[in-house]
Image (cartoon, rainbow, N blue to C red; front, side, top):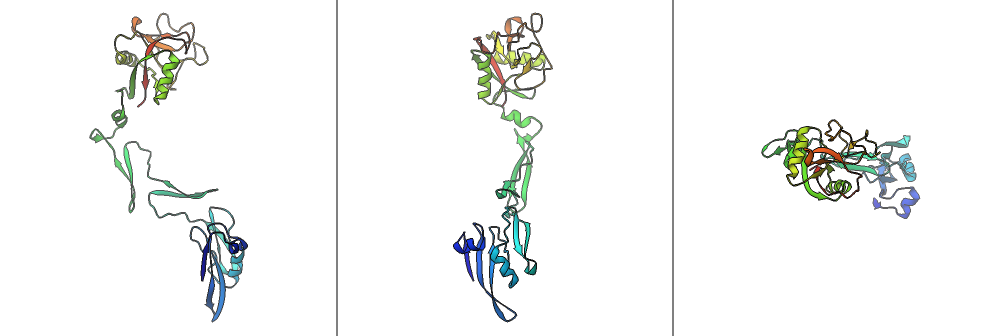
Length: 272
């Protein structure tokens, strides 16, 4: 028996695809030597193991050209198509077949739970141990608190920054850090922001703005709900510029003339 791989001249004549193997030889059937041709695809499926009529079908090939099927020859019935076998023998991958690429083996141990450590044992498969944070079992937000490089308060990680030349500059600086200008949702958070920056800063940029320029359409840059406000000096401003905390008024909110107007102030970002 001979065995060849790749798309040889003979393989091209047989209609075989790149990566197929061709097995050619003789075997005894009914006391008579008979020649046969076998096709072995990249997944190891033998298309035509039988003799006689099947060898004739093998000469034209049983490949239907679809990456997620495997053709085989069943004696007198000819070619049959079944699902391609994509099992890579690894319990730590999710085996699947999708056109046009064929078999894919994605890592399959992530359970989507931030409070588990996902590992894989080659014998028993995926394992999901309870994560610990500061020596204690993981609880909601606890691991995030441990990872916070700023100051953890009220379920968020806060970062005070000394100065920006405009509200837009402050927003861009936060986003460059992978964070957002802070949103404020309670009097306690407002007081926290003021204390985080500390004395000596007259103004503190926060993430409240109105993209439309309408004073009735203020929103937070981080997309959170507008469920609290602390506008000073009569309520909503007459022009919908971005907001900042003003120390001289007890850290009430005022509005700048525009996002880019030069206006030096401290700013606070949220995010790990």
